[in-house]
Length: 104
Image (tube, rainbow, N blue to C red; front, side):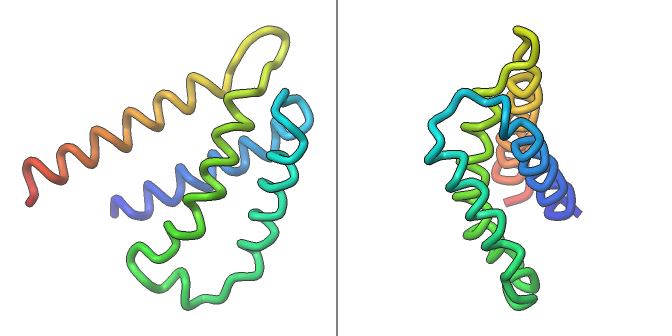
């Protein structure tokens, strides 16, 4: 069930990055790379999504570029993406900590 929550948050971050694509202040190469990785992901086969963690190989680069776009975004002087990114990062690291300490 955690994998479904994690992939849901990853998709939400990617969609948020695509929303902030025009308003971000990052270099155009980063914007272009994010769009290319997104389009590349649309062409991947079902075999990638069938394995337990194989999809993270694809999401790692797209997640990196999406985070850069979100962190560089600004809407009327407010950084709304930074709050979401911080909350998500804390959630993932806390979940990993619980997994390692209590489950394994």
